[in-house]
Length: 212
Image (cartoon, rainbow, N blue to C red):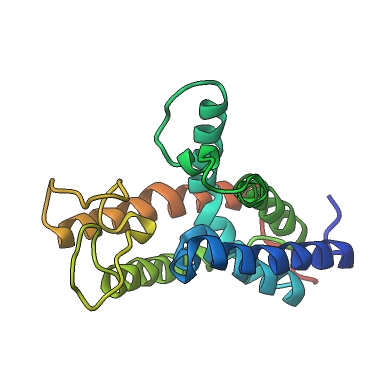
């Protein structure tokens, strides 16, 4: 595997995709959608590709490899006729134009792009610690910035971004206190998503050798 810089055509092509994605998503889903982990990763990846940054690309690989794999499995299950987890229900919602739903296929190919980029540049092992802090901060921000589904008359906009209020978008979970649920979400993200991705990347894309 050749290691070096990210080719210009990859950077330009990805930039063109982001230039279409951002206004389309803003108009269709609203600005809150850009706090989703996957959408944050899409934006940071753009910076990482142009900066040739092993660290930024490694951080986003740690962030999304596991959840986007689950997204792909859920999407494939829906195509095969299974109900699945409901993560990709919107991909089959005719209320959204097909081309908008087509843009969301980046959930499937962005992890592959990140794997390729990290393999090419090398994996920065600081990524796990950074993504742990950044991911927890993002979840806390979503919890503080938005009110849970069903809230009426509050000052905060209503949204369940990154499942900080439960697994459903139409109502909050009732199994435990909201703060306890948030703690569970953070723990699952770190231990169930970030750590496994870090361990995989350590084997798949070891850091480049230092010149002697």
